[in-house]
Length: 247
Image (cartoon, rainbow, N blue to C red; front, side, top):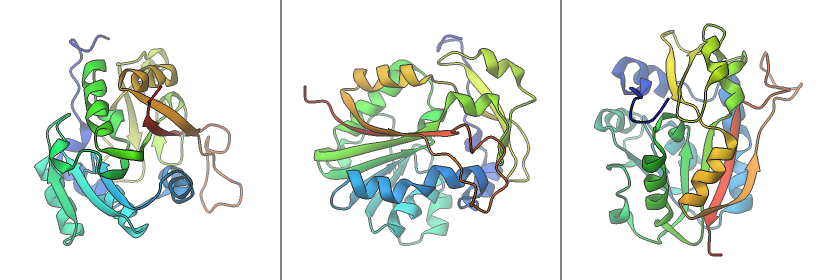
């Protein structure tokens, strides 16, 4: 499906669903998204000034604050930011437009965090321009941490998701809309995401002038207090640590 023919609507733009999502913390499959981040960040990021890109209702921003970061949450949705401020009255949340972040401070940040954000951004050109804009925020040793769904998330069953109602996901190509149903909230309407292969993520980063420093695909462990379904054998999430490509 080509970008210009795709009619994608961000599921989290719905106020009711956003409110429900904002109260989740890190249950079930989502636990694997966040479990290893403190260690990954400690290993790859120095100092503590951060931007949380696509912060939405602020869950990921609050996570960074608990790690001791001085963090600015940014999003293109004022409705989302209003919810974030309800949960984090003292937090710094700013409305932005896609690709325009220089007012935050060029070369001033140690970390730009993007959690699940690119699952909801269509288009090669759009994604590339956004990543280029975020790269400008990094200081000399700064990193972008990009966490998104693996392609396998949309074709397996999980503690937090079901995809069995959407067999068309099996044939998805980069840029296509894929669907799943979240099991951790009461709203069981399908969630729409943008499918992207790992190889095309690599190509995307190259187009944006970024290099991959490390990649992680967390798996569930036997001793964890969750009823894993596919999580012990198949990674639902992939975490890229990116730096400016100076070659």
